[in-house]
Image (cartoon, rainbow, N blue to C red; front, top):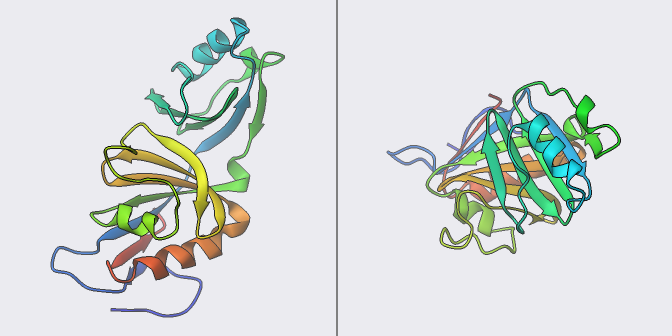
Length: 188
């Protein structure tokens, strides 16, 4: 059943299928999202970050690392996004790393379902073929003309990090683009 109007409230929109909606969108809450910058060639930096985060920093383009409630995404040379469901003590990183808590300025959406890659392909120039963009890959790209970070969590599950000021636009774009697959929106 298609519901109309903005903002999109929790519910199911678009085409109906016996197996349920092809895309599910869940807003994630309670995350600490940090932008880290530092000189990887300074041996104190990666060691201190590993001690604080509990996982080593990804070193390759688009690589991610995960463990102990922490996920770290490679964004650019000497730049990472760290996402944690736990509170972190960052004192050990003072003077070694530049840290910005960007959690209040970003929202996190978890997109999942059998048609999630089809949905993302509609507005993203990145090759999302599962052989190319598999679990453990992330990138900063455009989605519907908005800068986002896309993180592949599993074969049909992605986390999307979006500047909070584009919240309504991104939700509207996602739901409208997913109507043919059926889409379920929830706040978590």
